[in-house]
Image (cartoon, rainbow, N blue to C red; front, side, top):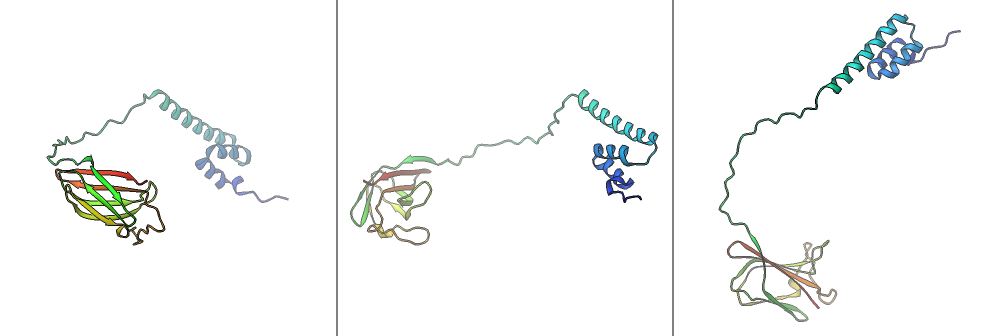
Length: 183
């Protein structure tokens, strides 16, 4: 009684494995195929030659780097646009139970200012923006004017003011910043 051969024992399965995964295919050819020994040796010899040829090519060839493709020379001209510089703002910050009083102690106006109350590394604080803080003048900002991005207003009765940062642009392309802790 003959049993049905499995797919890898049949000729098409052996040929497929010889092409796709030759070590297994080579083993199955010798074990299960009914091919003549001369055919098996020829196929085995072809694989041995392919392996040896591939190894000798990689061993004898010097490792070469691909030559870089020539690049078009581009001349970079410096621009006359001044780069903004960081400047520590000279300010005095005072506060009462309901508001901050921030004094610009410098001789230049500050423009496009952002004041941030209780800012942190991982979370943003409450923000107040103003177009100008005049030189040698004070700005009074009530606590309720500071808001979060979602519109939540700062409530001094629920939350303690811990710090305030001031970030403004100054004439001449400078950017100013200072950070104050509240005791």
